[in-house]
Length: 619
Image (cartoon, rainbow, N blue to C red; front, side, top):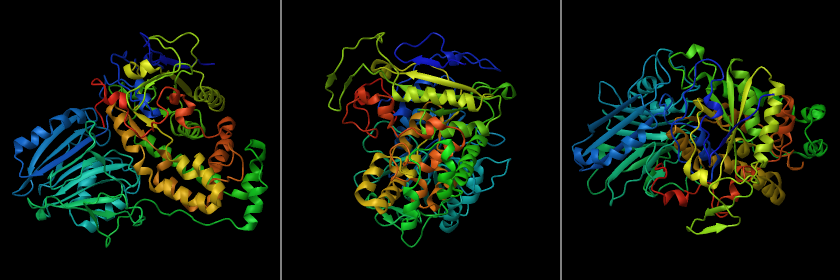
């Protein structure tokens, strides 16, 4: 039986287990430490990611313009963006200063990682008319991109007409994460926005009479003025109507499925164009059907737990729903594998010899990540290994500052981890058990269970550790759609099925406001691309079409009723342990909550790192 890899972030090993080659070309030794941002699982994963090799980066894009600013003033404003964007795209860096009107000039800046197409395409991509495109995205489906063309070139060709109707029609057909800034020279119009779930980062500072500037960028320094570009649709600016007194007027063409209530949090300076709508790759809206009395009788008769021997009883009620989910979820994982380069980031010189992990899974051992790991196995060649990244925090060290800068000490701590400290937290135990079951189910695969042990001291210092994976599969989106949160049970207990449906509808509608953009910035800053198969447009459409009792039956107990459909899919594939694990928030499963201020939320910026000048400068 293989032994799990371990790394203790408080005391970096001279040679970490992942530094040795599994097979094929040798991997270099880690040489740098990284700063982690406490409070979120994804933030800590970057401890195992080295930024010494720049072969894998997502694109970084930035646009800035101002009324009456000189070219010198514009370039001074963009000095910081150059440094931050370089982390996201090392292969090509281009900055173009373009005169938009007599009163307005703009800076278009792009850093590119070459992952697709016969050769790298520089950004901004300028056409013969002077139009400029900044694109950070992956067309996974919906459009057939020619094999001899990059996504960027294809998008530029499709947008070249500049007609709003055609722009909307093209964007509506894209399936996959994207963020863009496009300036159409003939019409003097600017378009910017991101996909319906906000899977790629895009920040902006809304213009105002006091600050007649417009900045749209993938990443920026920690700054309260910068905001997420809300994934409400496509934003437009008509530069021909810009004046010194009124500045920029920003309009929005909203997504087709959004209501006026959904747009209530929109910035007041933005005017909504209600006469036009932007479609998406979502084929179905959420099914709001309530169960009949006959169906309720069937639901009440179901077994109290999901076991391999009683799957037929569940399938008699759920029909072919399990097979439908497995089909679209497998396709979603396969699409993301197909778009991943054919080798790890260390073997670009000899990709045919590479059998190292090029894709990893953020792995708590829970239901969501276990399913992704098993489906990933079915999509990869048998000789490739897979990294399962499992984070744990000590159960006895509880010392950290709160949001006000005060220190709470429950136990004594030191600069080293006492021998009595244990990292056997729930996520570590569940992760190891699930890893062992994966080895039994798929013995041909080299499963690397990477144990990442983090202390309060280590979270501030980081740890050098090499993982050659370019892409990280993440489980976000499963709980929101399948009733996996405790608040879903609370709403169901208070108001029944209709209240549960309203909660799920709200969760899915606001998912772009959660942490996807921030997680994208953190991982991309360290050269890894997060991918979210549960938020694949076809997966979401399939789940939307199903009635709620197929996805979650909260008449059943905890560990069974929530995410019932996914549990049945897991049990069908043999993941019996994960199929019966109750939902556990990552901050409790990893025990990070014991290190952090109990009042802080995962969406808050970490107070300790904001006060630390050596901390990360990514918003």
